Image 1 (cartoon, rainbow, N blue to C red):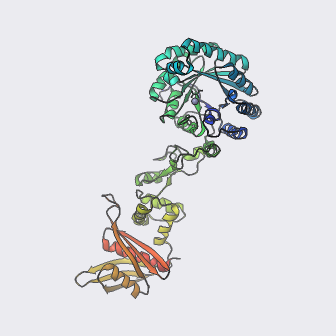
Image 2: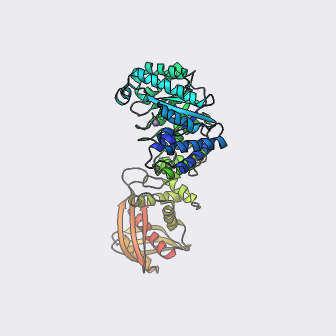
Image 3: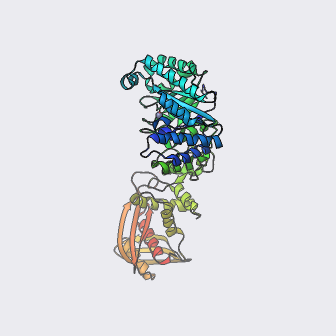
Length: 513
Ligand code: KIV
Ligand code: ZN
């Protein structure tokens, strides 16, 4: 693996600060405690618990969580954010001082654009503020505390990187233990950011821990953070469920699992991830997008025939053909879910029916697939219960079965010769009629099945030339008293499709348990 990284990753979670500040209703102390305890269960190495200088509520929450850490998490870094302003730094230091590993995380923007237009200060004035902030934080915390310095908008610092690295040297000399490189707004390419990270690692990586803190404005935060790790940044600043300002902070779970997949020992309890995600969604009121990697409802679902075939052939293997992980790794028990749609194949039919506890042969699955496909073209995705219902109609629920064998239409004489079975008895009968549906309906009446033809429809399954597409689909609705059923038949030969539909409908009407 091409990596400059020799250190283990240090997961530093910012949900309780960056995530919380972006919530419609920021968490109260009790809610913060629930999330904090869950972070400890996950095994994070550091937690930014709040922004003590911002409000009394946040100050109290920071103090409270620092005390909990003193009881149950002696090695976890507990940090409060602070602008490079004396009041913020003093409040931050006071709020976390009871934690066994307290930290003040102070920041100021170093990008030319922000220094000029937001701070309205010269670079040298900003440098002086940064050095003062770090010295004050170090002095307030004493030797057992650590100080993190962030160059806000680091991702916009490509034109003044030499100046920024010079400031880093100064703040390290003033006592900073960790240098954080935020992509405060994700605007460009991961590669550009990672190159800048590499330059910082080369310049000061032996004197301080290098951290990355990326936001997800363009959807590349995970990639940027993961690659920054391999470029030498050891501290990953991440948030549960990717909460955070705008499109959020780097997603905790994605980074953790990506590193794990690359063979990196994360030190985390990954099995807690799924439960955490559900809990955080509930507490934050931010629902989990169905397609969210790892934790979304759809992240385990396969719908196309090719994917379902691969998934079902590899479902008991550690590596799945179409899954990134064995989802039990993150505490999910729904690996490789197959949804049946018009794109699905017989492997899905077999898997779904089997998973409901019914044995089904591959040839039965092949027979059922086009029927389900036709239903799905109208109804959309079929859940397991619906698939099972159709399966049972066809293969299970009959005490005696009326079984179609063959039909010969003698066109000139308008006669149809049917061969079929009732129970075990094979029969043959010839019926005269205008067409096959009329002939077969009459046959059923002569056999004693009082059916009334309600409607009849003929079509084609799908379009194109795939294995099942282009076959005749026949749908017939029969009524007997109050009961109405729809029989369906699919076959290359329209006549056979018709007969399958009629026989199926009669079976449903008279022999369903
Ligand atoms: O995104 C950012 O730049 C921040 C800093 C305060 C670290 O959250
Ligand atoms: Zn941020």
